[in-house]
Amino acid sequence: QMQLVESGGGLVQPGGSLRLSCVASGIIRSINAMGWYRQAPGKERELAAVITRGGSTNYGDSVKGRFTISRDNAKNTVYLQMNSLNPEDTAVYYCNVGVYTSRWDDYWGQGTQVTVSS
Image (cartoon, rainbow, N blue to C red; front, side, top):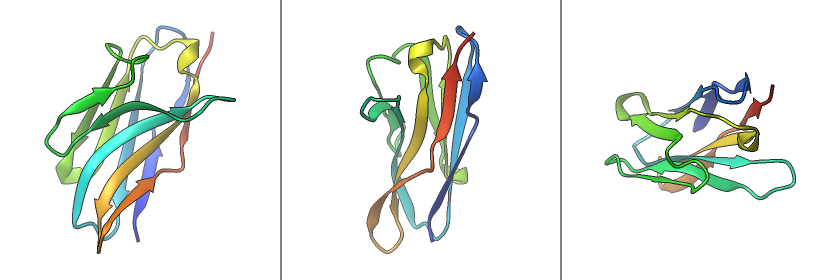
């Protein structure tokens, strides 16, 4: 059974940094794209960043130049380094992973809260 466990969220002051981690565990034959999405109160879920198995990346416009996504394929882990955080980055951040167990499926983590406030 597949499981995604996220960590690293919390409260940070404007201008600060946080690093999110998401570990995939279970019967995994292959992992395709890994990404982070976020959802602020009253808003739709939006892409923060995504990275392919080969390392190609794509970022949401609002985080370009401030966030960096990376992955460790040996550890089935994806990271999101978030710098120069501002209050508009406050949201629940969700890990999303495409995994092949006996077929390709899309999995979501439980979400981790990031709050940027002074």
